[in-house]
Length: 265
Ligand code: PAF
Image 1 (cartoon, rainbow, N blue to C red):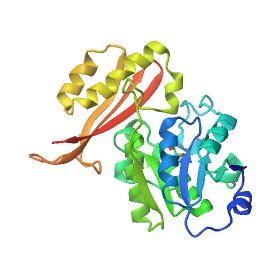
Image 2: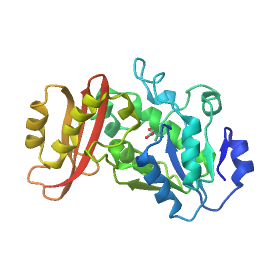
Image 3: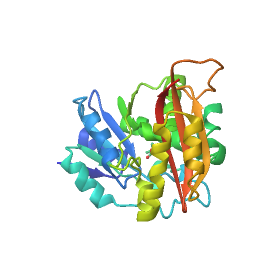
């Protein structure tokens, strides 16, 4: 039985203080990508808590905070069928009783790629993730590689601030068309979803040049960035051989999409 709780006290009453606890932080509007994180969390054998919180701190003015899909009862039903122990769905006042006051700065890696066009985004993400780790007393936490920069920054925060949490990155789950699953895919019309398939096809070329020419040939895809980095998001040095990451962000219609893939140079 999955319990839906809204405060840390209710969560404690529901699951007590287990020695280990696996957390899957989400903003809800769950899809198969989230469920793959839940399944990975369940392999730990620890109680599994999924948090559902649309975090205002990671949205800039003019972004889609108000429009972001909120589907709590359907989400809880899905999580029940996955055997999740508790769903923690706090209010904004529960998470930020003093308002956004002390926050976590992501450092230089938070200012590139997504951070270049969304300069306050990762401080919002890291602050809420740190609070969720502490409130829920997570020992393991699961994040998708779809938000690759987010995953790198969370690993960095955990290392730099000595947080006692194991961070697990899980592979991107894709539609049959190749489109990376995302709660924001709900904003796409059927035509836009077909157009957006070009992003995963571009990444699959494994080369910035080939990816760019595919995207450039798609007038309905408005490219924000296409970048090749080291796995920890540093610039690829001259003559580098080995694993790297190809990352893309683009607008299709009004929807901003991101995707990425591991590549071998
Ligand atoms: O990836 C997300 O859904 C969010 O950024 C997260 C990690 C739940 C923090 O709000």
